[in-house]
Amino acid sequence: MWSDACVAAFVPRKKWWFIVLTVAVVGIALVIPDSRRLQREPAKRYFLEGEFGEWGRVQATLSLDTYEPCLEVTSVSSGAQWEFWGTGDEQSVRFAEQDQRGQSGPPTNRVIRAQFNHNPFKIQATVGTLTNAPSVEIEFKTVAEYECWSGRRGIRFKHRGWDREYKGYVPVFREPTELERAAMRVCREDCVAAGKEFLGEAEPDWRETIHYFTQPTETSHWYEEDYCQIEHRGRAVLSLRMVASTYTGGAHPNSSTRCRNFRWQEGRLHEIALAELFREDGDWLSRLAEMVTADLKRQEASWIVDGSVKVSKPEHLNQFTLVPAGIVFYFDAYEMGSYAEGRYRVFVPFAQIEPVLKKSEWLRELRGN
Image (cartoon, rainbow, N blue to C red):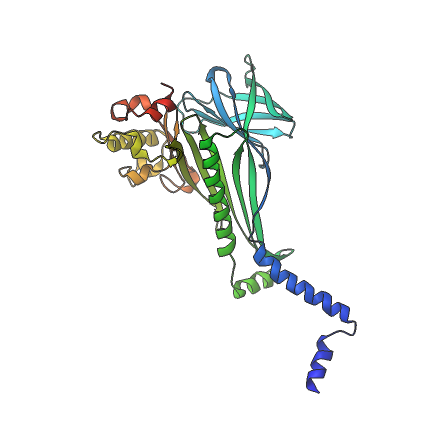
C-alpha cells in the first residue's frame, strides 16, 4: 500500500514526462565523464618562413585567434626575436613592435602592415617604422598550421557551478620530413595526455559542488592552455618550446616552459640533451653559467641582482632551444624574479663558446658550416 503511494507521488500521471526526466538524468551522468575526451579542430595559428629585410631569413608564428593578433619573428642567422601585437581583422592587420625579448639595444619601432591571402595562406606585408622610413615588401610562406585539441567538463547554470577547460595547440607541417613527422607525433601524444589528466583530476568533490551552486557570486572556472611553439626548423634540428598557462584559483594564472630539441639519429627520433653540445673535457657549465648570469643582470632580474639565486647547476639550464647562431635559455616567472617581471630569455652565441663545443656533424649542419 505504502509503495503504491510512493510511486504515485513520484511518477506523474503522464508517464512520458517521467521517461523524459529519466533519460535526461542518465544522459547527464553519461555525458560528464565522456567530456574528458578531447575534440580536434583547426586553429587560426600559423608557422611561417620568409625573407625579412635586413634580418635576412626569418621564421615567424602568427596567432589570429588570440585577444589581439600576434606576430612573433625570429631571425634565423642571429637568433634575435621580436614580438608584434596588432589590430584589425583576418584580412588586414597593423602590427606594432612591443619589445625585443632579451635583446640589447633600443626598440626599432617597426610597424608591419599585413594583408592575408588564405588560399593558400600567405602574408604580403609592408615593413616600415613609426617615423615613416623607407619600407620593405616581404612575403611569408606557410610551413605549418596549428590544430587545437580541446575539452570541457563541469556543471554550470548561469553563474553557479564549476567547469574545467583545456586547450592544446600542436603544429601540423604541410610537407613534413621524417624528423618533423615523428616529433609532432610525440607532441600530439603529450598534448592529449595533458588534457585528459587536467580534466580528469580537476573535478571537485560533492561538498565543493554544492558550495559553487549555493554561492552565486563564486565561480570555479579552471583552465589549462598548452602551446607548442616552433622556435627553429632546420634540416638537422627541430627546436620546440611548450608553454603551459594554467589557472586553478588564486590571484593570477601561472605559466611554465618545457623545451624539447629533436634530431634524426640512426633512423629514429632522438631528443638532444644540453651536454651533447659540449666536449667532456671542457668546463662548459661554469662558462655558460657566467654568461647567463651576466645577461640576466643586464636585464635586471631581481633575484640574480640581489644574489638570492645563482645559476650553477645543469638543471638551472635545462630549458633551452637551438638556433643556427647559438643557444637560447628560458626562465619562467618566479625562477629569476617576481611574477611581475615575467619570464627571461638569454641568448648565448656559439661563437663565444667555441672552445668547449663538440665538432659533431649534426652541430655543424645546424650552424650551416
